[in-house]
Length: 307
Length: 87
Image (cartoon, rainbow over all chains, first blue to last red):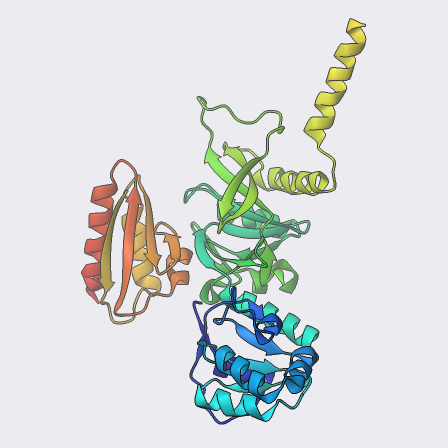
């Protein structure tokens, strides 16, 4: 989403409006601003497009400013195109703030929450709303707690592998189309389009409902994407990774995710290979890299023989 | 890469039957064929993907293909969508 209305924020957080202005502004960024230093007169790096939060510090500072200076600062502050100002802790703002904001058509809103906890809730909500999103072709499953995005051209056996994995006690999140969202800047979360949720399409059988067939434990609504498994037709000419020493990374929404390429041959048990890939990923993230340990052992042995 | 935009005119959008017809048509070609709407892109050879895209009537989508027969593939899929699936 590119923007969200101030009205929606009011609804979501149960805010009260303290002044009389129409509420029609839009918020376009997920960042939040506490304009302490601006109220003290320094406007060089001011970011007026953000929601402005006034907490106890700012409000008491304003109360103590001499009237003339207060008017000058507020005129400058509220002269910018600000979507809205939110006052926390249910604090009473100075009269001038209401007066000048009405002149500039900037809504002044109020919440009873404390500043830090309100900022944290608001940031989480805005981050989620503004999270960039794409839909990609693939099947998303959770194997031993690892979110695995299975990719590969159609007919290679992604859905069949997913079914096999579900039978082995793992979970399906999305088949064929995966909605990928970037949250908190470095995490990818995948979900299914509402329409195809819990469903799987298998050549020859058509569409099946995994939740009704295998139970509620066989599906999940959302899952972090930790690993990409690329299925490819076995190519005699191509060199596949035989050691697993180099981690290949791919980028989705500017987040890098490790990828393994698994060649597909009739009779190869893909679900089992994927289970092992997921377990190996977990092992690697706890600091143990089998391939590296193995080569270290080999190197030591060769060194010993030389000496 | 060949791509072309097309307006979906069939009365109920890309529901199950049109989706299966697109998949059938797309499977006649070697190329990777994709349908895109806004930021979302799905494989045209996958019925769940197309239905998941949720394309309603009067929506413009983009048909993309990459491969040896990409031009024929895009032309065929666009033609099929434009035909309104004989509905």
